[in-house]
Image 1 (cartoon, helix red, strand yellow):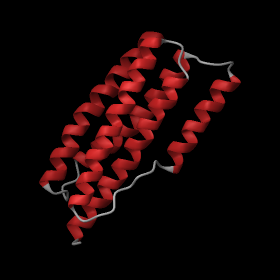
Image 2 (cartoon, one colour; image 1 turned 120 degrees about the horizontal axis):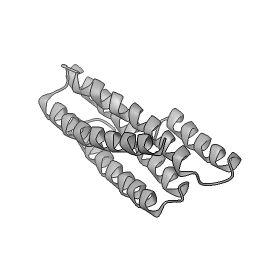
Image 3 (cartoon, one colour; image 1 turned 45 degrees about the horizontal axis):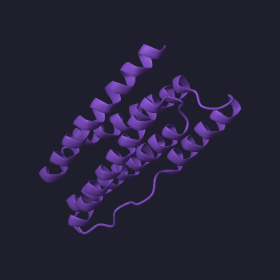
Length: 151
């Protein structure tokens, strides 16, 4: 692999890890809310993020790289923290879960924004990342609106 391909694979794998964090975070959130509406939205978002993960993994393969297939340690810890917090506060709490989801959305949005500004990425990767960022940003903005409506 040449240097540009190495860089593209590294950036893509970082996004894969964060996107897996997000997908798993949404699964956890769906298990910890009372609202059926939020549960359905979170499950749909988890599936959407898994689809995005597969697209990113395929792009890594197209560069001859080995795609990431697990979430980050920090993502796993955050999910466990949410489980513990839910247990300690007496069970599902929509407002608390939405707050945690927004925190996760801030992280993924920032990672995709950073990748969108990366001038070293090949145009195919840049196009995929930019398209994904539009979806991530829309999801982030919706969660943010919900959070502010609840607070």
